[in-house]
Length: 178
Ligand SMILES: CC(C)(COP(=O)(O)OP(=O)(O)OC[C@H]1O[C@@H](n2cnc3c(N)ncnc32)[C@H](O)[C@@H]1OP(=O)(O)O)[C@@H](O)C(=O)NCCC(=O)NCCS
Image (cartoon, rainbow, N blue to C red; front, side, top):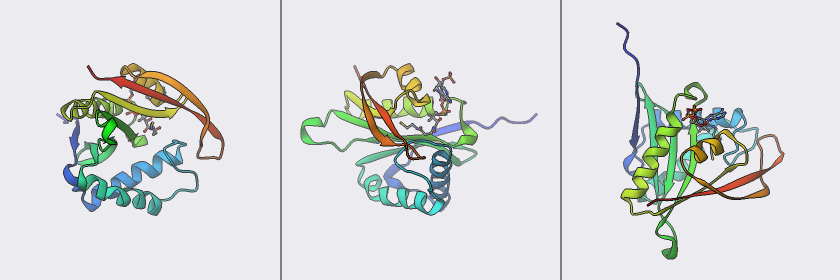
């Protein structure tokens, strides 16, 4: 009988990423951007730039300012999300959800949904009572966030440039954790 691979979600404590982890994260980011994900970059966007993005975040992971969650399939990272816990003193109850992405090979299998459930659980453990995020208006991610109980606060037109250079609207969303 053939065994079915299971996706395993975990937190990468203190940014303890292996070389293979960093490569998988960079590949997930690069492939996502190549397919048009609006997550901070425009085309052309290559593997070296993707690696540099993750390298730059390592100190924040090490300090615990950002908490990194990953989804692994057969040990290889196939998806990720971050919870930004380090906030100003008057916003210590808040957490930002950023850089949710799943490798194109792993999509529509509930991985993002699982990552978000873990991020929310982690936020609760950290005493957060409000989650905030933004995403491209009308994107698949917005559908997911709405499904998970995030509320649309409003939209900002012309907020960010798409990978191909078109200014797109962003949807600002929040979820009260009670
Ligand atoms: C958005 C993204 C993270 C979803 O990852 P995923 O693992 O495929 O999502 P899931 O399988 O957990 O899907 C959860 C729900 O999201 C919605 N969804 C996901 N992909 C969708 C798509 N292509 N079209 C419409 N809805 C979609 C659906 O409601 C889905 O539920 P369903 O499968 O029961 O219908 C993934 O497409 C991605 O990495 N995109 C590029 C990066 C990005 O845009 N990130 C968002 C940053 S704010």
